[in-house]
Length: 314
Image 1 (cartoon, rainbow, N blue to C red):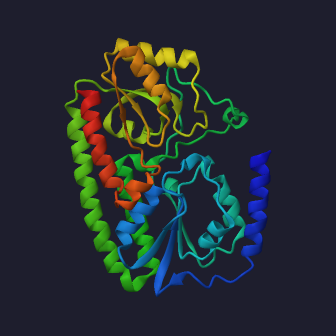
Image 2: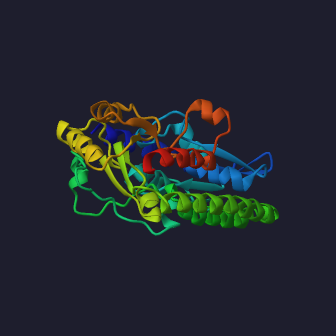
């Protein structure tokens, strides 16, 4: 009910804001690009370079699944030339805001429209959502499309094409920046293929949500986790934890994993029971304030994951 009330107020605010003309699609002669979460922001800033203003709505260090936009965020969206978001259930609020705004002068990019999407799956031992919407008949698609570098390439190509269409004087710059970034993604993909191809084992244990479905599919990995990637649950049942402990022992897994900005309680409980190490595998939903200030990006986070996977798979 609280969430519904929040969305109702937000949409009403958007409707009022939407009545005003979009006079700020450019600032200082540069187009404004607004993104909801970190992956889109990092892709866009690498493509845009210094030719556009790129804004991240999600505050560094904040949990992406509980993000709630402010009226100021709605104004930023309204005053953008290009707006980029993920899509899926977590972005229901975006659909409502866009429906209330005049988007005729805005280009909208949805990451889930850039790649082939797959449904979220419940693997053996995974705890189901308790929320009512989790039991609806309609399929829920996994939103974490960027976790596969191969998908990231498709997303980068789409963003570059849109920026070039919106800002034609700088189209060649965007295409060159994208070409350079795509080459880095190719290297990253090759490193992951080499790593997983020669691995001793192919199974990951997550004492956490699992937002790596696209990554696991791309590199032939199997996984067991407490929750699916878009779950709002944070506390696993004793049965779920016991299952993951047993799997860790049975498959002689040396590392239990958690995602970024996690409280790590489940992972630590599994590690204490089995004597394995705890490591973070970064899904790039968001980064810490310190990492943001230090300029870390998607490529840096994924390269950190290579070192972690060497521990987990070898």
